[in-house]
Image (cartoon, rainbow, N blue to C red):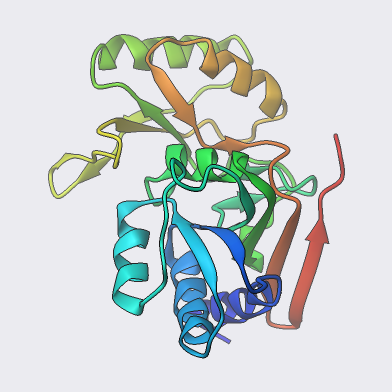
Length: 233
């Protein structure tokens, strides 16, 4: 199967965890969009859910496909979030944010009782960091924030380019009006230490390390579907 077919299969299995009346966080990205399309078919057939999207992009797709949406203001506690990931390690720690929605994705996931990640097998890694870590930052003080990130990383033995994400020759702007720095640190041995160091920088709004949030991962490969469950670190 090609990459899209694998994503569809993972999304199909994840849909089996969605029950009638559920308050559902709906992720962002190519894999999450396959899930949205399958979910819409179930909704059209009579499934009732209340969805909270993690981005304007996801909200637009849900609206086009007839999925009832709410907000975290109206529905502040969710039963389940289903979302994709850019990397998944054996403890189900994640790197997310390749689609630019990491802040809202993390807020929605934190409001959920459970988070299920859907992905193809290429996203499984022994240690996070091959995928550049997205860091959402305030526009004000961008250069100072980038330097602070580099210094914090160096204190943990990490180095690599920290680049402003661009889109159509202009800086990429998130739904929240922020910018994203993509940090190519490579292998990150201590994700919790990096998380704490980044959160201590005033210009950092949020980062793409999702630690202790995913309860399961549904992973599709050429040999079938595997469901992985979180083990506490």
